[in-house]
Length: 262
Length: 311
Image (cartoon, rainbow over all chains, first blue to last red):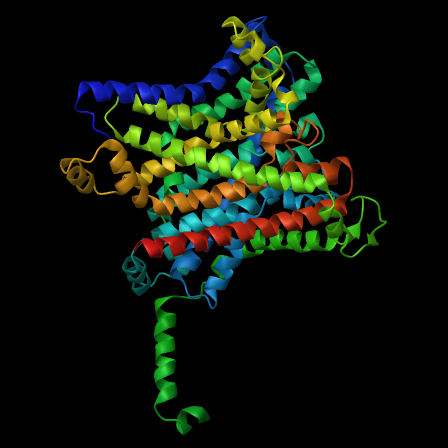
C-alpha cells in the first residue's frame, strides 16, 4: 500500500505504526503488571484457591455452548430458506428480522425481567441464554444468507433432480459448503455470549450461577479495595478468550470481514 | 376446472409457470420458522410489552399498576438527565466515529504495507475487541485513579501540577469513556478497512504512484472513495453502538460524577432497577429504540444519496 522502497520512508512508517499501537498495548501491560503488584503470584494463588471460581467458567461455557447451538440451528435453516427456497413475502420476514439489529439490549430489560420472574426462570442460565441467542440471530442470519446467496443454484438443483428433498439437500450439500461461515458465526457468537454483562448482572443473583463477566465485580465485593486481586481475577477471566483469539485469528477476522463485504 | 374451460390460454400458462417455480424451489416457510418464531417472537414480544409498560406507573414487581397515559413521556421533556444522556450520546458518536475512522484507515494502510511484525501489531490492536468490558474496566479505573498509573507517571516526570483525580471532573470523565470505547473498537474498524482495501485494484494504486501521487494523495483520492461502503457501515454500527452504550460508563464511572457520563443505557438501568420506576424506564427505552432505528435509516439513506452524487 504505502511506498516502502526507500529505507527512510520504511523506517518512518515502522515508527509511526509502533507509536500508534503503544496506546492499545499499555492498558494490557498495566493490567498484567497490576495483577502482580504486592504479593506477586500470591494474588493469583488467592484468586485461584477460591472454590467458587471454576463455577463461573462452567456457567460461561454452558451459556456460550447453548447460545451457539440455538443460534446455529436458527441461522443455518433460515439462511437456506431465505436464500434458496420459495417463501411468499420473503423480504417482509427478512426485514422484520433485520429491524431488530438496531435493538439495544437495555430496551428488553423491563419486559424480560417481568416475564422471567413470572415463569420462575430468575437466577437460572435460561433467563440469559434465550434473550442473548435471540439478539444474535438477526445478524448471523444476515451474514449466512449473504454467504448462501453466493452458492450456485445449479448444485442444489442437481441434488433435487437426483431425488433429494429439501432436508437432504440442506444436510448433504448446503451444510458442507457453508463451513467457513459457520465457523465465523460460532466465533462471533462465542465472543458475544462469553462477554455479555448486562443480562447476567440482572438475572443471575447467586455466585454459583454467575458467569465470568461478573467475576471482577464479585472480587470487588470480596476483597474490597485490594486492586491487585481484582486485576488478577480480570487477567484470569480474560486469558481464555485472548488465547482463543490468537489460535483462531483467521476465523475471527474472516467472520468480521464477511459481515462488512456484503 | 370450470375456469380453465372458460378462459382458454391465460390460466394454463400461469399455472404452468407456477408449477415450474414450485419445482425449482420447494416451500421455505418451515425453514425460516425457527428463526422467526424464536428471535422475532421473543424480541417483538418484549418490544410490545415495553410499549405497554411505558404507559404505566409501576415498580416492576408489585401487582399495583396505574395507567398514566403519556405522563412518562411528558416527564422526559423536563428531565435534565435525559437531555444530558442525549447530548453525551451525540458527542460520543461524533468523537468515537471520527477517531476510529482516522485510526482504522491508518492502521489498515500500514498493515497493508511491507513492514515488520505486522501480525503482532494486528493482534495487539484486536485483543481489546475480544476482551469484555467487565474484564478491562478495573484496569481503567486504576490507571486514572488519584494514586493510579497516570498520576504516578506525571509525578515521576515532574509534572505534578497536572496530576489530579481524573474521574472527579465530568468533562474529563466523559473523554475517558470515549477513549476506552475507541480503544475497544478500533480493532474491528481496522479489520473492516483492511478487508475493504484488499478489494481495491493494486494496479490503480500503482498507476497513481507512477503518475507521481504521494501516500496522502493515494489515501484521499483512491482509498477513501474506494472504502465508502465500509465507512457507511461503520457509521451505522457506531451510531447504534453509541445509543447502546452501557458497559463502559456503568463499570468505569457509574454514570457520574453527577450524571456527567450518563448514557441511555445507564440511565434506563438506574431508573428501572435502582429506582424501580419501570414505567419511566420503559418510556426511555421506547425513545431510545426510535432514535436507533431513525439513525440507521438516516445514515443509510444519506450514504446512498451521497454515493449516487459521486457517480
